[in-house]
Image (cartoon, rainbow, N blue to C red; front, side):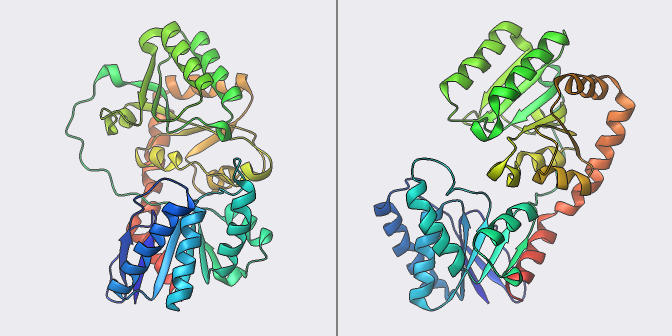
Length: 336
C-alpha cells in the first residue's frame, strides 16, 4: 500500500505501508497557486504509484485540489484535520462551500482530538465509522549537552502565537498583574510571529516595565532551543471559550508535556477540549479567576517537592505520545 501525504503528516514505513511526504511549498492562498500545487500532487501521485492521498488541513484549498486529483486518478482521498479554518476571516464565504465538499468526499477522516471530531461529525453528518482521532506525538528528548543558564530560568513560559483565539485581552493583563504581585517572577514569551500591533505594544510595555524579568524571543530567532523549556516552571496556554473555540486544542501543550512542564490553562473551565484532555492525562490545570491563578503560580513556583512530583508524572505520561505508537495506530485505522 502506498500513501501520498500532503501537509504535516509524518513519514511512515513498515512492511505493508510506504508513505511519501509531499510538503507544501507555497503559503499563498490564491487559486492560481493552488492550481499549480494540483499539478505537482498529480505528478507525484503517479510517480510513486499512490493508492491513497492523505491531506492535512486547515489549508482547505490544498485539500480541495488534492481531492480533485484523487477523483481524477480514481484513488482514495483521506483527510487529516488539525484545526478549523473555514470559520475565520474574510474568506469565510469561499471556504465554507469548499470545506463541505472536501469533508464529504473524504473516505476516512482523522482529527487531533475527540471534540473536533464530534464538531465536524455533527456539522456535516459524517459516518462515525469513517472518523477517528489521534493526539499529537513527539520524539523523545535527546540528552541535553548544554548547561543550564540562570538567565534562562523562567517561572512562566508561553510558547507560540498569541492571536485572537488565545483571548489576549484577558490573558495578558493577568500576566502583567502576576509580574506586579510577585516581585521576582520571570516570564518568557517565545516562538511567536505575526502578532497584532496591540499585542506587540503590550509585550514591549511589559519588557520595558519589568526589564529582564520579561523575556521575548520571536519564532524567527535562531536562539530558541530546548534550554528555554527545561528551565521553565509552568507552561502557559490561553483559549477563548464558546462556539468554535471549545474544540481548540493548542499544540503547545505537547511541547510542555515533552519537557515535563505543568500547564496552566487560563480560560473558562467548562466544555473545553483541553479540560477533557487534562482529565485523562494529569498534565495541567484550568483556571480563569485571577486570584486562583496567582495562588496556583505561587504554589508551583515555591513548592519544589510538589513541582518535582508533578514533573515526574508528566514525563511518565509522555510515553503515550510516542510518534511510533501514534503513527502505527493512525495508519492501522486508515487501512482498516
